[in-house]
Image (tube, rainbow over all chains, first blue to last red; front, side, top):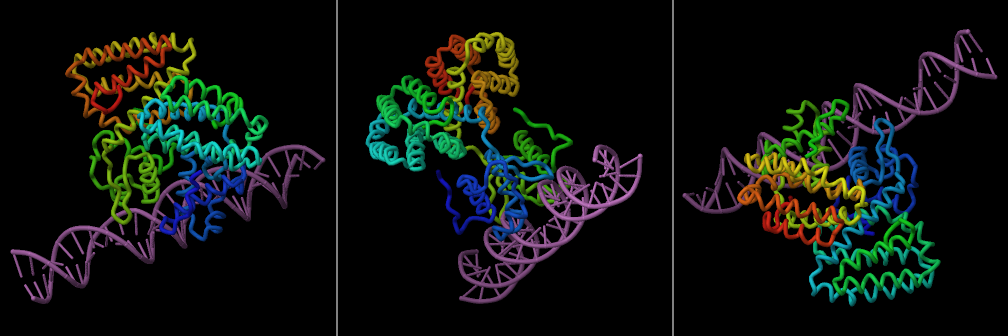
Length: 217
Length: 217
DNA sequence: GACATCCAACTGGGATACAAGTAGGGTACG
DNA sequence: CGTACCCTACTTGTATCCCAGTTGGATGTC
């Protein structure tokens, strides 16, 4: 999730950025609500200037839309965006598997064994949020194989942005818990063998089954 | 290149952003030079506030690094960034070919025939910049196959950011003009047949040959 | 001449002041 | 009662002001 905790050394603009972002992810600031620079500045005990900078960044990242002279609206992801994000993450995960050097690949299963166990536990105990975080980390591991920080930062932004819609569509997973786990083990197997073609196809299938065209996990 | 022309309706911050960005791409603001908010504000006849917003955005996009109380430095791409960008663009182009629906694939050769001819012309006449722009459009076409605006916007940002280093490494191409064209035709062939595995491998090769690990074209 | 110190002139970060535009409600008029 | 209008209370966008931190050169000292 990488909700960067408000560091003491950070600038006011950074604090504002992470505060607003966290509030949206928590559901504290609901989709469709209008954000006022004045209001935010007051609650954060700072002036409008850093708040404004934060909102601009949040717009670049897709969290809000700023309407001139009217305000910043907390955006919903459109169906298209959800699909496009899934396809983009697919591309990055596949590229990670494709570029993985053998040493990294072999360590992968060991590194993810614990994660998979805990996924199962979360599914059985009905811990939606816990499962979501674990699954996100699981998928991220494939991108990490590429040893490419640029891909990772792009991937992280897409995944974070989708966190809410992932939570929302979680029930679909919980109806057939074993299938999701099986799909994950399947992906891991392909990745470990370095079979990126099979991986890509399995990931297509996984994305499809998990939620029509929703998030990836 | 998409150097967004300074629109009259745009805000001062937008004007500042596109002005500075264009100046860097033109080589007017050289890598390593220090930008002063005051100075930029003066030449653009506006206050520091919009300039400041523009510089912040440019930092997010990787063009400059802002040092507190010192100024904004026009950044050079590190070798790592060049490599990582090439790998990321590789992932997106391959994904485009993979996701292309047959109808789009078939139109591709026709759509790029003219481009390829003009590439050849630019190579023969020694028009470096012209060739660079054409080659960038050529590669972009593969991403367009995915019909995914998110991928495209990510790709565009990477490609723009790399424009200068592409120009710089152009001479390597001009030493063996026929090879570059042949590689492009080869890529196009794989794409048209929908053979994304072969496409990915050929693109690896193409990137390697064009410039060790430099830009993609 | 080499080095430490200090100071003045910068820098960007943030707060505040002002300008310009929007939306919505109250009011006057038909 | 319906409608057009206007005015007020908001909103963001930009300009200006203040502050703290950095830097590099001038100065004094050894």
